[in-house]
Amino acid sequence: MKYEEKIKEQLTMEKDISLARIPRISPLGNWDWDIEKNTLWWSDVIYKIFGLYRHEFEGTYNSFLELVHPDDREYVRQTIDSTLHLKKPFIIEHRIVQPDGSEKIVCNQAEVVFNSTGIPVRMLGTIQDITESINTETELKLADIVFKNTLEGIAITNVEGTILSVNPAFTTITGYSANEAIGKNPRILKSDHHDDKFYKNMWTELLEKGHWHGEIWNRKKNGEAYYEWLTIVAIKDIDGKPCNYVSVFRDITEIRQKDEHILHMAYHDPLTNLPNRLLFHDRLQQALSSAHRHPRTIAIMFIDLDRFKIINDTLGHNIGDTLLQAVALRLKDAVRQNDTVSRLGGDEFIILLSEIEKVQDAALVAQKILHLLSASFIAHGHELNITASIGISIYPDDGNDVQTLMKKADTAMYHAKEQGKNAYQFYKENMNTMLFERILLENNLHRAIERNEFLLYYQPKIDTNSWKICGVEVLLRWQHSEMGLVSPSQFIPIAEETNLIIPIGE
Picture 1 (cartoon, rainbow, N blue to C red):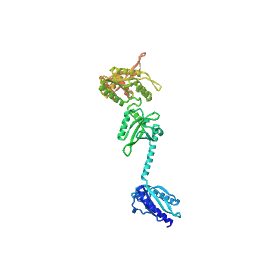
Picture 2: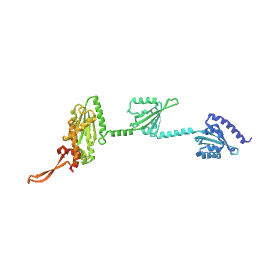
Picture 3: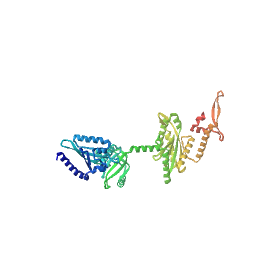
């Protein structure tokens, strides 16, 4: 027997033995390509990998290439050709296409058998389906990329709570490097903002549900406290017991500060930073609810600045705003810490005295306010002097709800203004009648211009030396169709306050 034939026989025997045993102990499929006859033999494992039955495969090299993914086909052909010429084994990964169109990734490796003259006669190899491992590897790589690049901090601990791994974002947020954190307990981040009960409840929920999430204060390496949204998930083994804990968190301090800022803006006047009407209503309602349960006296003080409009219109809104800010500070100095000073808008302020022993206490506060406001203000180099008119209503004497008390304090303020300003007035029942008459007069004053009800009276001026007329004074009179001749002392102040004095003058 020739040497070449002996080699073939030996290889055939080895092939038959190995191919019969290997599929039972390994996921490797074996193949044998007789190059001279161009016949390709596959083990059962390979048919299973390719999703074919024996009768569906021609058993040739070209029929194998047809099953290789089109994008990988040339790569596989070149690799095999190179192996035949260089006489070196190969190991490559490539895709195959199954009859149903699905793809798999296989690891294909082989070596060449040469005859005595160095001509390749056979190629023996194995094919292994590595699709799952490749996908797993891809997922692991992707998970690693996410772990390293996510903006959320991640810490992995064992069941005892010892930190095993942290990502770069953990260091960015907390200031602790991986070397400083690994081996430590997450307690290194503990702040003083939560009591033991908080952490006990956290771990109780984590053990019962397998996860916990919520907002928590922690502390950075530099001692700075920060607010974070934290999620902790228990990783369980095949027996269902926790073997690791994964903590994912993000710093929400800035978000919370923005939320608090937005909330603050919603309830505070942006110019003076005083509570606005909405917050004042809420605090007054709370004070009234408390006073219902524990009877006590409450005072509401409505404050309107005298002559502010003249200053604002003459010197400009910039100076007017500075003046309002200074007034707000003086009003806060006039009351107690638990009282509320609010700006309703424009030059109108309102004060809640949440608890007074007697009505006269409100009068003392009003006097203090008038005294504080009487001192000159300096705004952008201008020395300004203003006064205020204050109206006061009392709970429970004047009402027991927010709207009634504020309305009556407003009515009393108008009465103080009519009495000469720079004064305070407590609400009285007859003030409503007087206010109604004032509103009626104001409405009629608007129509008086349209109806041409104003008359001019000319009063001569006499030179006492010559007793001759040297000029005249023009006096304005209002002749109302129903009220008759209305005194200037009644309508001129209203006209000045409502800006009707300008069209009347014209």
